[in-house]
Amino acid sequence: MTVAELIEKLRNYPPGMLVVVQGWEGGYDAVEDIGIVDIVYDPSESYFGEYRRSEREDTSYIDAILLPRKS
Image 1 (tube, rainbow, N blue to C red):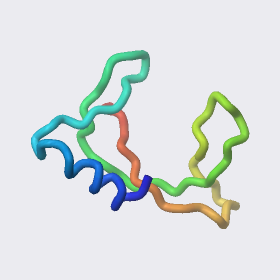
Image 2 (cartoon, rainbow, N blue to C red; image 1 turned 135 degrees about the horizontal axis):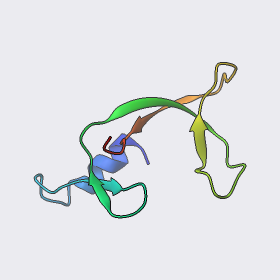
Image 3 (tube, one colour; image 1 turned 90 degrees about the vertical axis):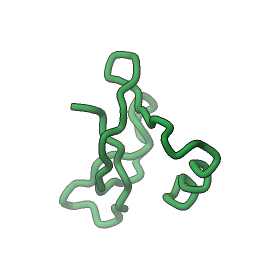
């Protein structure tokens, strides 16, 4: 999903509505900030996400917005 696609979807909801992410072991945490992360498409393991953080030798990384879990 791109930023434009996310904005378009969010337009359908009240501006004051809470945004959450799944908690580590269950439940939900509020999104408190956003960040940018360099990632590489790598769907090698079914139990990991489709992307992984890029490493120094990766040349085909992309920037993505990260909604971090509450620390």
